[in-house]
Length: 273
Image (cartoon, rainbow, N blue to C red; front, side):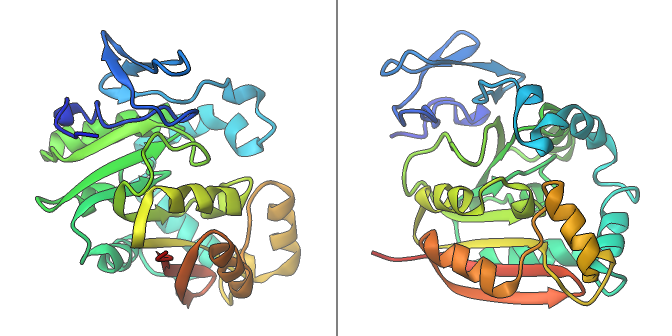
């Protein structure tokens, strides 16, 4: 499929997340001729989420309105420094250190990069370059709108945002040279389903770089009862053998973990055929 159609808006390269048929552009929307689904485009952001999230069985999705409102403080001192220190401990990496670690893993990959649960593009905006075109997906309208505003203000032309679920990505198989998944893997209802879908859109040998939480030595997550409470409320706290097992079951290999406090930074590669 050609990427020449409306590349400036990131439109024209998407496929139907349901049937994976190439989408046709119409006025203010994308249409699937195969299954007759239609997806609106608002402020250059295609919306592939058809469900009403407030009705979701997933508690994280039900509180999406609150996450939308959080977008304006997400890159301020009120969010990342607090979360990293409280959950990961005072020896956790800072946000700049996390960004450097995540992007160092994908630095050799040129071409298309997928930013999973991208928020306002905190990591993806820093990854975008003349050699890297970034496609960020998230389910939060507020985060995506904030991301487009940041990208416009910062003059970043080669980053595109879409509203989509990680379990149903609107991209063809083997579309991306690399992916990042920063601070969100622990929120997905089914880790293996999410990782398999990420793997589907990665080229063989492509790297996945991410960070999440583990039962480490720092922050409130070092306490078993705290971890159990968060697991009961939709936050997954991974053990290293567990996440390696999930990655292997999802078609990844070469798991490389690095733990700081209770923050787990990792990379793995899409298994070659």
